[in-house]
Amino acid sequence: MDQNFKDNNTTVEVEAQVLRSMKAEELQLKLTMQDLADQLDDTQEELKATKESLRLVSKDLRDTRLQLHASIALQEKAEDVATLCEKVMYGFLMRWLTKKNQESVKTMLRFYHPTERVKMMHALLTYLLFGKKLYLEREVEQTHFRIICKKIDEDAITLPAHSLMVRLMQKYGLFAKIS
Image (cartoon, rainbow, N blue to C red):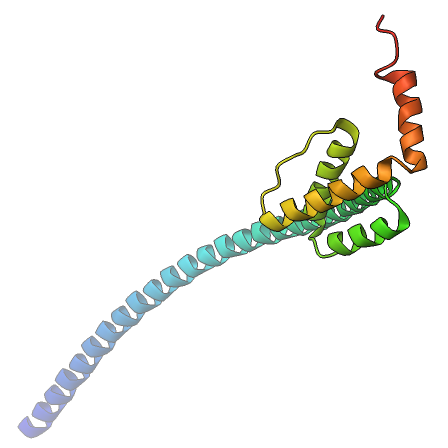
């Protein structure tokens, strides 16, 4: 019976060790589960913050897109106005030239960028109306300016535009009384 008691005692000791081991594992699992639950809470908070950031960025993107479309429409309108102004200046300049000289000036101006073309026509109209020669930055512009000014000087004497200018000066300018 002594042997039987010893076996039962050993069995109880083994079962007690298994029970202690299981309790330690249970405690370890509870700690791991608590740690995972904390990590899940942190991740959910990060997800909420990321969703809010994404919502704000999406709103900013919509606002930016609307501003872009408005800017494009405004730029197209400005380009239309600039093109119209260029055409008016070009038409006014051409009134002072004969057909032959118009073709020559048209050939020179067509190689210019629209901005440079407007600057050239401004300088030419300033010379035409006020007799003042403006300085142009590039040598080729200065050369073309001198050539076109000579053509204006040649043509202005014989064209109907000269007669119009004389009538305007008599009516509004040099020959009018100063009151």
